[in-house]
Length: 37
Image (tube, rainbow, N blue to C red; front, side, top):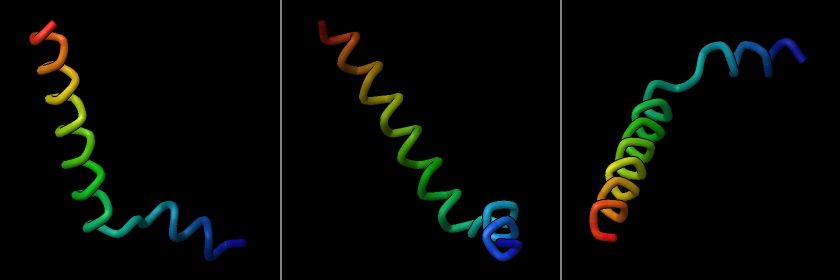
């Protein structure tokens, strides 16, 4: 159980970067669709 907690508290930096890129792309896409309507 403690191993899971450690993994959550110390996530992989590459995963953080990927999630950040995905979130940014999603926000831009949503803003673009709002502007197109």
